[in-house]
Length: 205
Image (cartoon, rainbow, N blue to C red):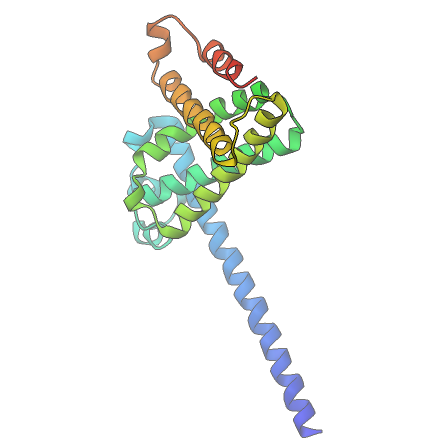
């Protein structure tokens, strides 16, 4: 009986410990989310040049030290924002049930106009490994979604390797379109991102 009661006590303590750990994790994610929201507000107002960890801390209502405990650097914070953006892009494409490659590509370019500056500023060596893995995972999700539509279009490489390169080439080109559009370079040569994207997609249909 005593052993049984001891086991019950241990089980109860384990469950209580798990609940506390979950609550702590939830609280940490809520605070990290608040910091990311503050960073987004500052980016919308001043751009990346005006984003500092002190400014983010002040906007979020935390000390700079508290912000650094969640994001070790400005680059880490920017990369985390990029993860959120690409994650949302993947969800949007999936929930729309779109099969058309042009529609998916258009969504990618619009999202990438926000993402590319973040990735450019967040140099790979300055991004924590777990954030880098999350970013890579979410990009792979987008690549798979694009790959499905390229397959439907019928123009693919002969091998699996060549087909994968087709999809990566398309993604890379869309990143370039977004970067040029976001920097205003297309307007200087009197073209727009929609026409360039349409011409690009035609190569895969």
